[in-house]
Length: 338
Ligand SMILES: [Zn+2]
Ligand SMILES: [Zn+2]
Image 1 (tube, rainbow, N blue to C red):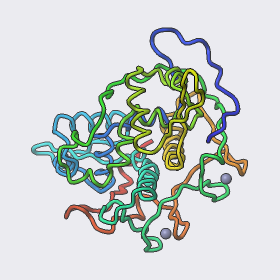
Image 2 (cartoon, rainbow, N blue to C red):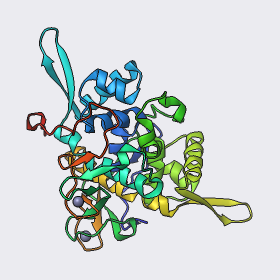
Image 3 (cartoon, rainbow, N blue to C red):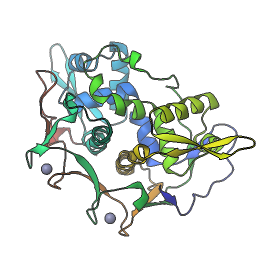
Image 4 (cartoon, protein in one colour):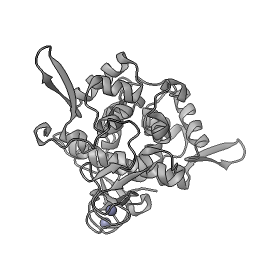
């Protein structure tokens, strides 16, 4: 559990608009925490660049795909490149900001592999080209090299701490397998997408790492409607990431605690938070600071569990590409930005 040393100064929140605590992880989830967005990103990491390629690989309906590509472009994660002049044709490339999300993607895969390893799942068979072994992605503290665990990390307010307007709940509907519509991609990422591909599920889980346990505390912190909160808490209990513990008998009251599997999701949150700090922090600075037990501000880094070397978009590849035309993600320096 992340211990919280000092809370951000919290002025009384006005009734409208709802205010939530500034958090880089929450900002990251607001930008990418959507099922279709994650699938599009996954395809981009697999080297897909063109609209038809995204459509084929993700199975996302074209109107939704257009919307998500646009949103990722606006957010700075993808950029549009003219690859043909007559008639004009564009492709989408990961920006430096987009490629930097790879560590978070690896952490999501690593978590899936630890808890629901499926040898038939292509995305569970990534090879670390540096050592040639199957990649078991781990997140380590850059300063001391130790694997990052929630219990070894302390959260304090950063210079950018405070409140900001709550993100609008655009995707409040429960995401389900049925939404996927028979894409060849979904079986690979099902678990991770269930958690991170629904913004409120991800926010609720992140809240649990902030030490939230009781319904009313989640509600106050996240400014979420109670029916949505009930649904997401139930879902996380069903998935084995939270457990409901009775803390008072009369009247009956229960609270939600992270299970081992739930706590093990922390590297995903920590990687997303670091990404949000790098790309979404505003002029006022980081909203929060994670300090590792070694005393250093936590700068997490994705590494290969076998050889300890850095794992990045340039030195990892799928062992068996699920679709014929897949190639390693491009690392074209011209598409760098920021
Ligand atoms: Zn450390
Ligand atoms: Zn390795």
